[in-house]
Length: 228
Image (cartoon, rainbow, N blue to C red; front, top):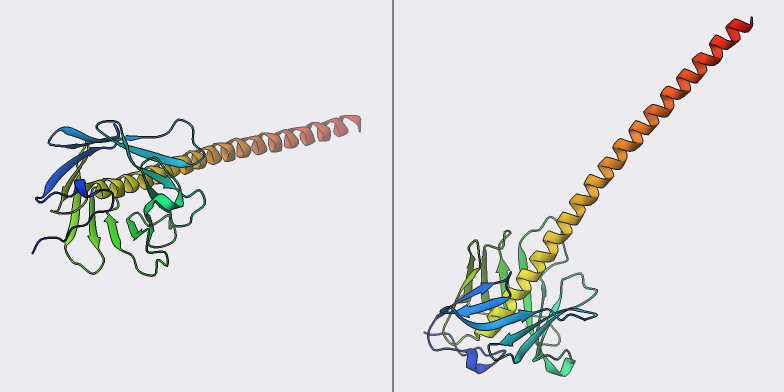
């Protein structure tokens, strides 16, 4: 039995046969059969962390916006270039609070109409190194899409009747979260190196000062002996 029609972004992105998509995140481009289908852009001026996805004709298809303060890394996706609540398509957030040691990225996805969010509508499970990712719908064991990563890009197999624009949006969110984690890890490593360097300098300065104190005391003692 085939997958029932799942249209989140646009029905035109639902195809009757499986399709393979290539996403080059560094370039911000998605392809089908080497033909560009989406381009991902970051607005030059924005108070929020946003990404706007355009089709090949340059029309804005959907916008990803990260919530500024969120313990779950919540992202919201809107129609076109909007960020109005009335244009919300869906939101995605981590299934648990942020845990530094937890390298996997598990996202719960909620459609706009699911305001209570008591049960997720879709689930995204990405491996620790972001080299694999499975996407499924609630109540179904059938994968909607499966991603693997090579050196250059994501390779995604999308099942028939599944909105591949929706899949690209989810994988873009996964990539953004992973990129943020990597940047944070690098920053923390730099801080640790700086702290170690400062500690070394501090120890050296203390040793130098202590040696000076000992030398001064010796000089004073010698001076007192000469007076007597």
